[in-house]
Length: 68
Image (cartoon, rainbow, N blue to C red; front, side, top):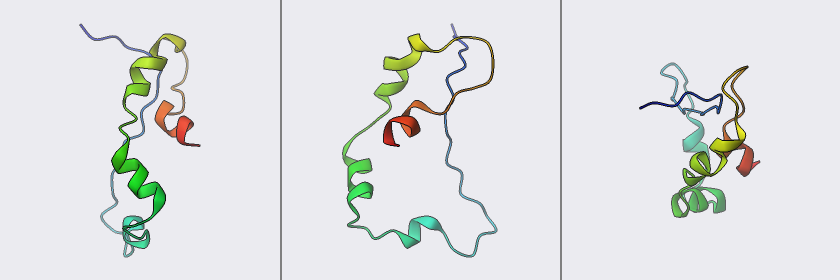
């Protein structure tokens, strides 16, 4: 059973034609890179699902919103 909600999800897809990759510009020891590896924020999708309706435009990704 699939539930359709208007909860948006941001999918990171690297572009093939870029000469510079943003991931290459961030040092390996960067605090936010280490934090992203340490904490799995996917629990936010289930925790916030009840607050999203089934009609209208998709929202901002809850994980992105939380990180902002």
